[in-house]
Length: 217
Image (cartoon, rainbow, N blue to C red; front, side):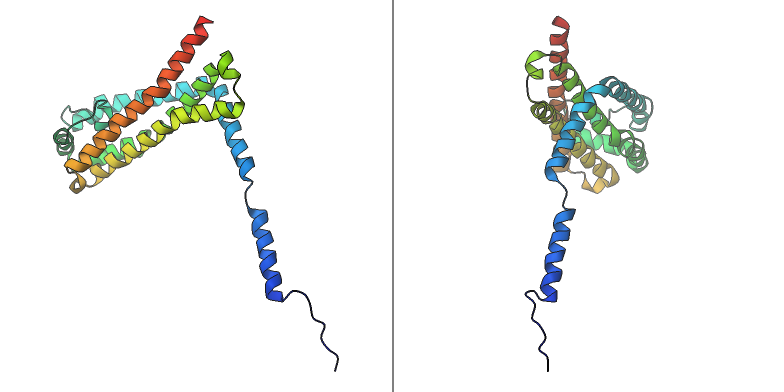
């Protein structure tokens, strides 16, 4: 009887090693993804004008809805999103009560699921593009490595973006379920509103300073 030759690897082991290689081959190149992100951010400076126009158009539409529609629903009370200095729990509850369930649903659909779902991201891209567009016309900023330019712009803008979406989520939840409205949740929504505007002021101020510096050259 002829002996069967022995192999150095069993079929099960061979399949495992092959699977490992396949998985390794499918892993994304993290360095490549990072470089693509940096390049994408830097290229935003080319579209600063178009992004600014788009942001302004949406802001005008949102403002029109606020003053000509939403305040009718709330009996003249400003939306929580518009209260830069925040609001007390009683003021927040008065707004929710004045809207009622129907008014709350309308604001969710026509604000949080439409315009304000897009606006924070669009405004953030606009601010990034303006910081880079003006910054690259200044010698100190232009002398920085491209990667550091992009990271600096992101560090200035991203905190606002996250705070705005967090505030939108909290207020939308309060509108969708009034039972969630209590002094703690309303105070939290107020703090997010103040934080959002405070963080927005930082990149806006940087853009203004850069723009003035460019004009003085």
